[in-house]
Amino acid sequence: MKILPGSLFWLCISLLCLTTDANHGYRSSRKWLPRTAPQNLVTADALVSKDDLPASFDWRSVGGRNFVTSDVNQHIPQYCGSCWIHGTTAALNDRIKIMRKGQFPDVMLARQVLMNCVPDPQNTSVPPPGCDGGDPWMIHQYLMKNDVPDETCMPYQARNMQCNPSDQCRNCLPKHGCWPIDTWTGYGVSSFGNLSGEVAMMKEIYARGPIACSFATDAMFMMNYSKVASENEGVFVTNKTFTTDDIDHTMEVAGWGTTASGMKYWIIRNSWGTYWGSNGWLKLKRGVNMLQSESECDWAIPRFGELDEVLAGRVLGSYISKPSRLRHTRSCDILDSTLEEPLTYYKSLEPIKPHWPRSWRRLHLVDGIRVRDMDTVVVSSRNSLSKTKKGLLRSSSGTVTYSSTHRLKVDLDAQEIAYILGDGVPGGGHAWTPSRLAVEFKTRTGRPGVWMHYDIGLSSFLLLFPKTFEVFGPANEFVRLVRKNCRTLLDNVEDAMVRLAMGREDGRIHYNIADSASQDPEDKWVKHMNDLSFASASPKAHILPRLTTHRLKAAYIKSNDSVVAPERTSRSDALGFGNL
Image (cartoon, rainbow, N blue to C red; front, side, top):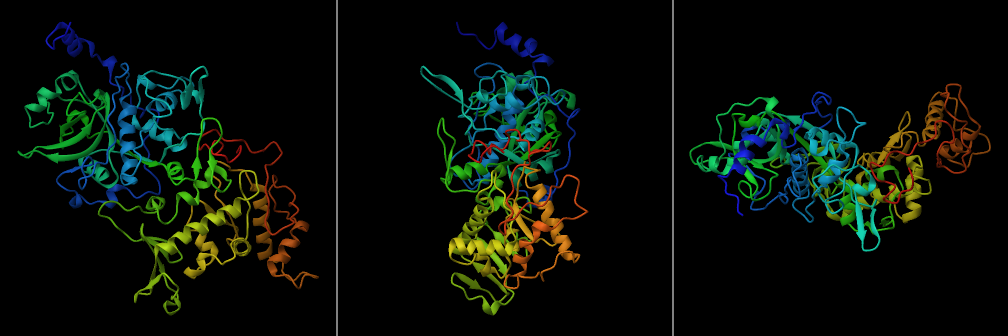
């Protein structure tokens, strides 16, 4: 029997069943998670002026191209108050597509994994809220420290489950049942924030992509949207007044526009299926905080470096074995590797000053080397007359532009340096002096490094890759791999190196050592490091290790302060880098 819209069933749904206890899934975390401003990041407000904003903008059609991903339905296969998951992942999915310029593939983050794993802000000892509601801030905070897979790992089931390996990614076969897969490609966020107000929302959407906003909705919006919108040029309008206490729903805001009569509106994606609204989307009156739409919005910058690794063919996965990696450094947290931050990828420069639509800017780095855009490396010339190498264009301004061939060499040489620094140590981690590192590089490759074309030293060259390399010591005498999530690895050895360098500056170590006249100063210094100690050594510092080469090998510390393997957040173990 077909149930007509005018039946008692629909009357119950629209008037009685939608109580305050049946919210669509929004539950504010402000009481337990204070909103803090992002650190060391250029905001959209600083990048885009109000005058730069167009009268209309829609990420579904930018220059005739669609930059949004597929629509989904939070109410299938059963009702679940997970709008906070859906509105947030929709914005993140679309931002990944925007940052990747619409290239294959479209990424759909696993909604069910976020349901299973994002903790309750009030009490982390209880099961995650899932269908019981949350807000975008909770998700973004979780993704800052944890990765999640895409939908192919764990389809949406619209119910609360547990946060264990089999409920994050699994595979099933006939007669064998299901088992967890731990070799999935992970996604997270590198920064996130909160905003409100019409202009701030427009700037963020225009600069970096859609945002997730929270709304106060009611039965009229849910059940009679089409009728109300059809009477107002396709825009939903209501005279009902709401407060922030009435907020009960989260949706993605992806653009704005103006009707023929001049009514301003937001372009919004709902999560109730394509049979609701305009193929799952809606227009809502803009500039008047209708439905509290302009009071509580969130944004985040996605991380997807592992996807780039997979698409480049450097990581190949299977059901049982760990992924096969094509010749790469063994290192903590994959270093965020050189393969994620070559100069050819503008996204790697994001922490310094990213470029946005209509904001092509010269991005200054270090030692005169800067990236003007993702296709050009510009280097200040110390002596423009000597800049005559093949593939180089010289300008009268004293700068030189390297071709794509030189840019590729930069990436490859940075990778080779990473291989050398991480070779042969569990988890990766030799500390070298730059001069010895340059010698080792030439020994392995048979040629000098590409940094010689830039008229800078190796240390300055490595500073172009801050996610991968770091220099240390009182005068930056040493270089090593960045080791996120491995805080105590190498600390004792490197403490010794720093103290030795300080001792050398104080005159306690000197180059003029007997019976070593044929050795260069660095060799003399390294040869006699074993016999040195300092009263200023920290209580936890061990006796200086015996050094047999010019590089300092490090291992895990066998003591009460031993290195503790971090929780599985970056998945370095699953990617074949050993147990960190």
